[in-house]
Length: 626
Image (cartoon, rainbow, N blue to C red; front, top):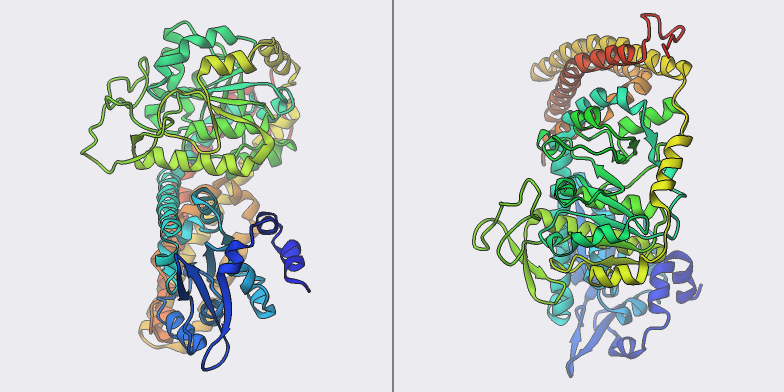
């Protein structure tokens, strides 16, 4: 098959990028025979001719290079420079099925020369291999974000091949900057997940009784197609233009993040909807003493006091969390899935995309500190907070005017998420940054808020009426459905108690297995393993009921698996002891999670029965007092 036809079939995105590329870069590269066999590649750079591989024996060079890579069973290897693929071939020979290889190739010409060889094309079709070709820093960021998993960040190995880093100096710097930003963003996101997993589980049980009264956000997804939405965040530049929001009532959907709500209300500005997902008690302070009846868009991660005390309509959304998925199974209806991110503004942006709104206008989205160090707008809880540029882990990024602005690792993770999401959205919506300050969000069109209003917010789109009609059209859950959900919760409660008992047996057997390995009594191993397999099988039989605890159990599994990785040079006895210790830790973690969750689940069931007037036999026949 012709190389370009192969590329079109197998890698259409790369094909679209390179098909009309100038031949200059291709003509800079020359395939030459190596002195000891095989081909090498010569590249012309600034009047110099540089060999990308050894001019004598590129295969031997590739083997020496690849064998020096510190490869572990679960490594993700990121290679800067593909060349003609010799080192990639050798690296793949060393890799297991669990490894992943990401290749960043800066030159279209070198890439096109390489894929002329059929064996290179076969390498790139390997399921462990992913490649980026001639992407800019934002493309590299998007590429790395896609293929570096949360549980693999500590297992990434970054290596550059041959003279690549010297020849493509600026692109290599972009690559290293992108890698640093991706790892930073993912570490922050993962740490958030790990830190809040148990709290989110508790929030779910506390909020579920109110979620049964909430409207799925999906009911709004077709209501604002092609209509402007303004996402109001709480950055310091909000002070410059929030007064203009009253000019666009009913001319756009004004979606306000919870942090900015008090600042708007203080100026007699009432948004159309507020969105909040933060599960911390501190987030509740943004809503204390707030008196308004606008709709609240929330997820199960939100602090339950906000959900319980909210006086307006509530819209519930699925942010790919297992609690929402469990509720969807019970309802037989999707809630409406919205991609999450490290900030509530990221979630608001995802929601706007699902509304199919256009344009999406951002204000108060500084993602950086003001020139005098303020972190947030006046009127927010943080209005007095300031930072100094010479303290903390801060760095400068490009501002909307091209000048450097100071930002933090957290703000930078929000920025990285926005830029990846905007690139992934493509032409689904025009995104306008009308913040009038802060960091530059690549992929947005920069305008003043006044100009954005004049251009896009001129027609009456009847925002309030659309929201009211959606709310009025929603039919609350009937007594049979609420009774059915209550029965599922009670069955889950019984199942968790049984699993706790099985877990105790698993701990005891794991301790026994450890002792057997320590004493080298190998004749008992199979019998104990069989009993542990029986326990695991019984637990798996209840996996549907365990789904309600998925987030906290995933946390346990992650922590345990990370703590019991295979050690180099361990013998069979060492492996057995490690596996026994890991098994014991898993059962202990599962039991601790269940013991923690049981009272929250019991309180949830009691709350539902009290709110909806269910009797003690609600699972058999629902009785709801109207």
